[in-house]
Length: 215
Image 1 (cartoon, rainbow, N blue to C red):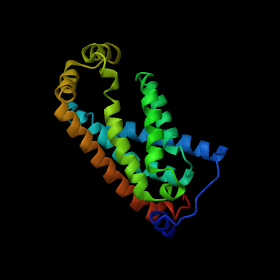
Image 2 (cartoon, rainbow, N blue to C red):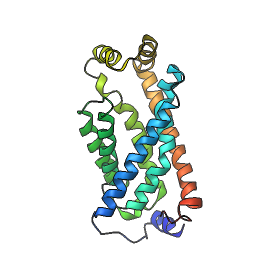
Image 3 (cartoon, one colour):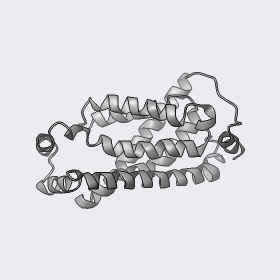
Image 4 (tube, rainbow, N blue to C red):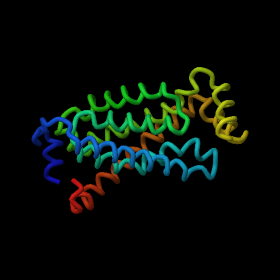
């Protein structure tokens, strides 16, 4: 991957072009695909509430990492992560998450772009994309706690009533997310698994995406 090596050395050409229809459509479609994969990954852990509380976020970011990395390189525009996080927040709102999560995701995505992916050289480097996704993985885990910050008991009671969660789910939730030590541990696990997913994404881009002309 000569382009990636040049990007990591900072010698790859800089793309000064703005967003076009093609880039917007590609970013939105790949963002939606990434979120769907994250949902699917999370659902795979639901055979056990205890396992799901620890691993659902990690399963999602692990499976979705290669698509995110493909999107960053394919779109190659500043703000691609912000588009992804905005689409993520909007889709999450359709399944019951609160609209006040939207600013968290939009601002978080913009910060990730500024820190990790502000230049074309960085967007063409899988390591910078890995840094962005690994950081997003931790923020994604923390974002799931936003609805509970005001009144956790009241929110959980509402979730039980509206979504049909049983008492076993509630007990498992409080066991892990009512304990700061568990929250930190789960966040670190999620980030580590997101990082591993990026390593797989890096290998896939080398072996398959470039051959298929996706890059």
